[in-house]
Image (cartoon, rainbow, N blue to C red):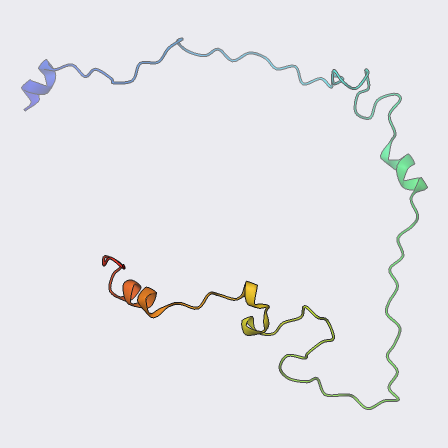
Length: 121
């Protein structure tokens, strides 16, 4: 087996084109974008974030007002609560007829249960 392997030379099935790729130095200096009119990030003529934040109103997080305890605690209702909205449905059967699933014929049910290979005439 070894003799056969030494006689047969391995030929790769993939041929790479172009040879080895040479790495080039990359200039990491900040340069203006061609559509920016010569402006660079944080450069002269740009708006600094600190200047922008001075113009914004301060964010104030207020705590919610305390609940009045004059009324006894009400028990939350269990289940779904019907609302007065005309489109608030709790079941598929309450939807308008055009949005409900179609009713299947006995022939369709038999065709599906039978594997669907039969011909319906």
